[in-house]
Length: 500
Image (cartoon, rainbow, N blue to C red):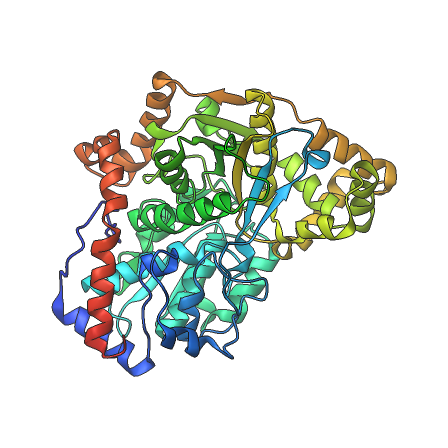
């Protein structure tokens, strides 16, 4: 896992027995039982007692039982458990490509309706079980562009400790409204300058907060717990969806995994899928801030994919494509699928039934970026009906209603009617080109890898030998293989609390 302050890898071992004991006592008092990563991934069965505790628990409450819902196997009501994670397979009538595009739905996660609560859990539990975080003494600082800090605040509430969200002031109103309901003090929301691309400003604020020894920074962009949790849990969920795919034949292959980078946690699932299926991995970024594509910079509104740097936990040397998507596309698609005029246009253009179109209420802005990128990749590679592309919808449209109205005013000041909705469908789905799709060779991978030097070595103080170690696939294999050791620490922690 990653140290909270300098961001490099620590072993799965207890470093402070006294702090760990304080956390054990807090867990015992609050009847807090920690699930292992194997349990959350569906690789190990849930204890019967944990399932019994979930009965009657509101999935949107800060109840310790909701830790056992921090996984991909929740039903739509987020109360019951299903055998196969929720997903939507997009038909060719909608995408215009023959390849099936399968979208996993992160909105079924508890408390925040987004899968970022998983890396938040992973980050804090790794500190608890090693004796690096005392819930009665420390404050958890969650730097984010929106969903990760919400997940962190939720996990902090469950532990009964202070959780502080650090995020740009320009994020969606719905994010801030959620935070205002969950925080315990107004000072626990820290607004930084800018929008989605202003990640450095978040880091700068965290450096300031870290001067107080009571503050523990849980930086998702450098926390290898983020990588490990998604490799194990999200990678396994994708594999489960692929295994259960209707109409699958002996010729069907999991050709590609597409993910906006953001913190580069989710894209770690691609590493697992590449090992299992030879799947190729595509990283998505905003065209208005083409960092991987062009060593560039800028501002954009694809909320949830903070960029203008290369995350420390991005396994760049294992990435096969970079795809740029304009935030104009994602803003207009958000409006298209979340307005009466837009849904009517989709119905006219595709003939899909209303229920199929309504499923897009479970797709947020970054999900639309992933879908658009998957369509571009399918066209670029000329993928056919046996070539499955898998991707993720981190959250739902419920986080972006005000953004849809903003897109209506920005792009259609004279009105958004049938003709305008048809143009969005034809231009931003059916008309997506293969521009801004870069297939990476080793030279391009090295170029992107080297960009990370300026953030992590020059600005954040990571040792150059640690930075360079990430070029070797064996480094990442070691992070993934550490999951059982972390699960053993979790089991030991539960046993000491007398609650497992």
